[in-house]
Length: 411
Image (cartoon, rainbow, N blue to C red; front, side, top):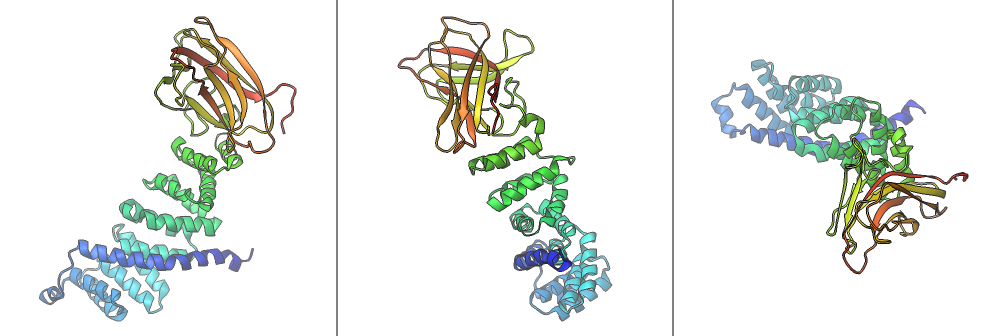
């Protein structure tokens, strides 16, 4: 790709950002002046040599569209107080408006280096660096602003999202800011994932950060993966999970031993709550050091129990689970099911066997087929099958496996 072609996305981004950043800079100037309790114009007559008042007057002249007057006042302020950040920034912007861009860059950069608190300087520098195609520097200044002024985050979230969509070269500098785990990281990723194009960028950032010192947390992964699943992008969700955690994604289901392992939703067990049932991963009261899934159900209600997302390929599979009853178990009051997302077809149903009384650990298994069409994503669920009267049952589950059926090649 030619250098001119490479620069086109950055130019489009700079053009798209220019109006918004210009308005944002004006807003910052007004807010900063208000915070400094800008005095009446007469105040400057009472203290004509005050560098602070000269700088404020210079800023007002600049905003009124009189850069020459602003430049003169800013120079006066700097003669009286050489380290006056506002005056230096106003001088730089005024110089830029008469065409000396490099001198303006030097002056405003110096103002930004002197103070992280001068919002207008950093907004100007974001705009300038974007026009230069310097994403790393632009986003560093945006980072400084977002850390200090959370109310500016929505403006820069939009800018960063646009950058990621317009030019893939922006992704590495964005990732570099995220590595430092600023407070705006999680809300930015959530905001980015709110659109299809942004979700694609967020997934790319997740992979880029995986080998860094600050990979995505389970919570951060969870909202990206859940967004993909909710959008019907089951293969993309499975692929992202595989790239972020190859070892964990190689076993199905995740945490089939019910050890309460950490992991991102929806690829981990999600326990529901509802009247008529109690579900928890608890220490096994028969085997020291082991945990298992304990379910207490009244045999009559229809609560949610526990579920997990899977993306099994089409073909024959086998579901196996160990179980033991703590109480007598009436027939067909619970079932492990594999349900196709979308049309709610039940691909597998492993009915809970009956038991006359407490039982030792036993194994149940069922073979099932994932259809070739319309079942790219599935919910593995424990479902209640209510009877006509309440009969409290307590059952434990452990050692669940979902694997290709023996002797059958998977598509």
